[in-house]
Image (cartoon, rainbow, N blue to C red):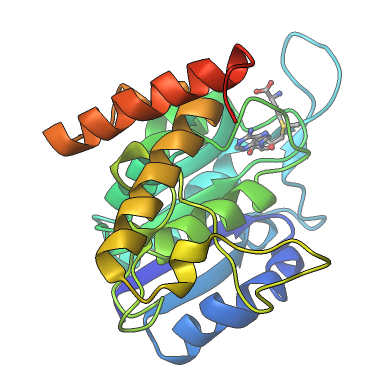
Length: 254
Ligand SMILES: C[S@@+](CC[C@H](N)C(=O)[O-])C[C@H]1O[C@@H](n2cnc3c(N)ncnc32)[C@H](O)[C@@H]1O
């Protein structure tokens, strides 16, 4: 097994179906990844298994207690002391493809999912190695965020996408968005596909794809271009595309 995910949650049932379907389901079956849900409530010591309490200082909502989280993380770490503990929180580092790739090199991730107003600050200070946000919005819990992270990270594990496919082919590889994709039929309600894709000319197809990736990134995410590692040829192509876009936008283009 190449990678292990331990998910610490109050709602383990949320994970049963989404992670068992399609590519992730197959990766689990093949033994490439292992996903274990750990119910934080099982680490409470009281009869009623209380995992949350009201905040010190007053205010609305509940806060997840530090002791059950501490015991749950310690239990997960007892199997592998170097396991990397991540807390999913809107206050964390923004999640992106580079971070997914970096996390995929760790053999064991522990993912702490918060609920309510979040977790006691001491759990973060004492047991968490890294805090990650999946976007600038607030979810009701960290479970969906953990699923997003597991999905994106698993795609980098060799074998998960099959032997010929690689996560390097997707959007964000080299900071560019992917070119448009088409499949049969070649004519849908009068709308065709770019001729070059039917030409069988691989170098022309490659050039078209590079051009469209640059064009789409320029139009939708110009911020990514600054990070892209472009060859001199790509830069020349980009210059042409930017000129073309300028023309189109000023109404001179085709
Ligand atoms: C309602 S939120 C708590 C938000 C917290 N009061 C705050 O303002 O930072 C409950 C839990 O959902 C998870 N969560 C919410 N939004 C998230 C996001 N954008 N990325 C990752 N996790 C998130 C976190 O685990 C959080 O503890």
